[in-house]
Image (cartoon, rainbow, N blue to C red; front, top):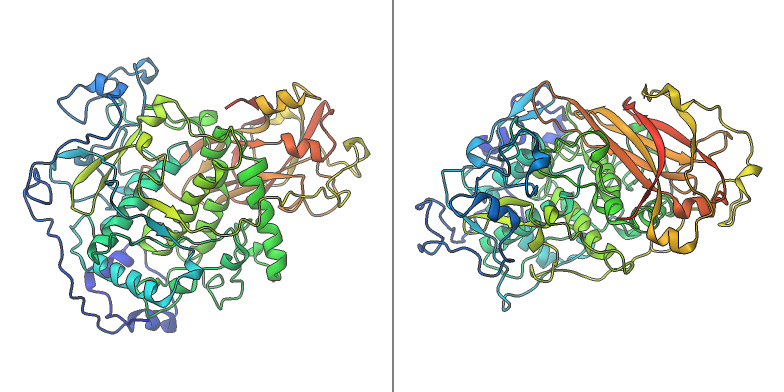
Length: 604
């Protein structure tokens, strides 16, 4: 491994803002600061040029490969990117409601706990161009599993990161500015464009989660490749859905590498007390000395539920729609299956729980400061590609309000690019691919607790029943496990009906403090026989997970909903003919307010 010089004062301030002092041991910080000099000899692209010109000095042109004129273009006309979607106070009356790119000139401070942090891009009125696909002749960038890369690749990746970190802080391609992209979009630096009164822009908790992060990786990767003049350079993906990838990859664990940061949970790093990834982790009490086989058994069953049995509909996988003017209100918002778990759990598991805000990975504002973040999200992005191969109905949304939603990113030539979701759907057109690896969780269904087999006895033969809370008691604070008998509108549905509509349990009106780690589990028809159902049990329907973030000072409260697919679960439990199901909510971290529960049916 190469060694490096200690971080500059500016870099140190970036890694440790004055308002967030880390609490590391002297030995840990000594390893981090003892890097030796490294002198790159590569040409840099200057961003100090006329803001209206492209990298070759010519006036940039609009994309001639994008889709035909969108509804949004009709609304805002040809004069400006920043037209209002609708100037009416009621955004539902707009002709079209795709989320628009933020107005960078109005970027404000992001919120972290009770403080704020600056993470706005270095915008100076640059002309905005439309995204253009890579040329057909450009080579494919193939992402490899991080635990399988060779020494030559590691040296190349370290060199690229070193050059990115060496760029001035006001260069939009610098590591600081790239990390701040996530901070600005996630912690309240932007408002939605053209909406009065103002509404925060948030790229989590809805259907824009996957495409935003795909573009984020796309430009981050291309910037790294351009700095080392390698058009084939690709990020590695953290293959956490494989038994061989169940820990932080070794390339991120060397203190002498630029890929290393000290702000990680010390028990979960290679060599730590509990280095194996637990996809059900939410707090220190969840750490257990499991064998690799036991931990993999949990993780593979989680993956099967999140990708297969619990993700049969687009809304279950991608998350609920977010239209312009919506503030992710209550039951109209909701994360998709992968965004909740394993995405959210891994953020919390990797972040340093001795820090005030779980830096780096454990808070959205700081997650991009850890190079591990980009490999984590590369595997999240890989899940999008995989999900579309698992069945004929697993396709992208066709709603124009999704396809025409857009974001802004700086490219490898310092140009500001408007990117539509509709242009992100095919990784191959983006010249991005993934090395093929074994999918070992594909057929790993959970097993019912009460039989130990996949064919359970009818639910009426259950053992001791749980004490039930009446639905009329909601809303209530979830500070202890509760069980509720929830009526099912339909039972004994035909195979065709089940294929058309997925039966779902909906946890409504979840009110949380979004600056806190929040997690609770959901189980169905779980007997009161001691420990509640876990991820290996069919009764375990899924979890709600909140990675800490904050939109605006004083606005920590947030309402959302959790929707879990349960058609297969009910069949495996022999409960398909029951009039009610017993839903058990088990708090694991935090005390959210729960508005209610119901059973519904989801067609899309």
